[in-house]
Image (cartoon, rainbow, N blue to C red; front, top):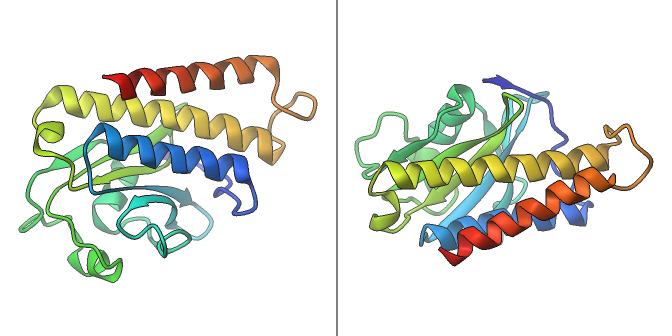
Length: 192
């Protein structure tokens, strides 16, 4: 997957921030996790940036940066592949010192790239999901599906906000309908 430059959700953009917070809150609920986060790729600096956190660390991690090739989130961003790790104790890709610097060291995690149109926008990471949530291929598929929907919603919001949309100011009706459909899908996932 090719990384892409995406406006790293402007802290002053309440719609993008609300969307990102919703993504991590829903992911945390779906997978029964202790924490969840979204990192967006800042290609100019070559870093992943915490843009939303639910659970442990939400008070102080937003805005924190680290090299895009570092840790499991970095591996997911570079490879474009989802991953489930049941035991991080001896995982070579897991950067324990980076985790310790966030004041939360998980035992297990799930991570999926946020991909839209073949481009990696960032990473959705779920920390210490319930054992049932990481028990097999269907759960990994659910994680990937959720991350794909989140990436589409994020792309719609950021494209509209950055002026990349070619239409008149405001979200065009077609994009509004797509965003509303994504919200309905997220609500359906929550009901599972």
